[in-house]
Length: 214
Image 1 (cartoon, rainbow, N blue to C red):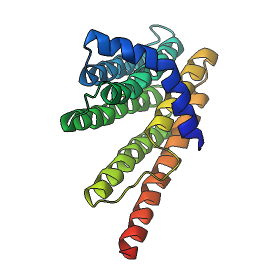
Image 2: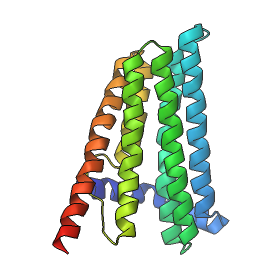
Image 3: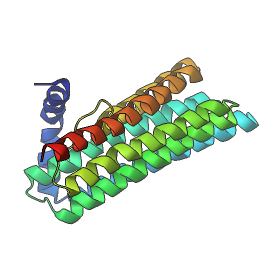
Image 4: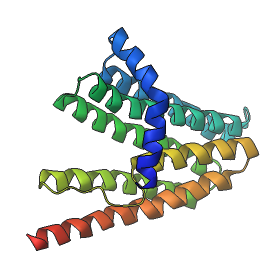
């Protein structure tokens, strides 16, 4: 059992009682997916506020960054709960899978875009560029997998999949906010920018090998 499977089992053990409660209340997976996306919109709003605070010195931007990170972490739990709810409640659907994937991409883009603006407003231009590279890598990891699955190729290889990206973004934002140091946030964006793009090409190579084998 790899570390992702182990962590997933632990998290499922914690959230399963809440899942059963949701099933009894008639809450649908699509509603949970939408709630998680709304959470990420709130995180974006805090990050945008932090970006403006760096420029206008209206308030402490680091408090806003910390709050944004906490919200991303909570919204990430919703992202796990919707799939679990669909399976346990026998409510899986093709549209639900599409809705989940679409809102996942929007959630990542809006939060990383806001972090990009934080760096630009704080005078860290090249870190803004690096965060944009992280956005590209995040989208390409998902795109390559979707394209591969369209060719009937299972493609889940790589180091920086969505759960890892969410955790890294949330944790470094919280730490940056707590210690009032943007270098933690910068380190997280560098990590995602490098590993997400490596993962995207890793998946391309994986698909090439599979197709070449056929």
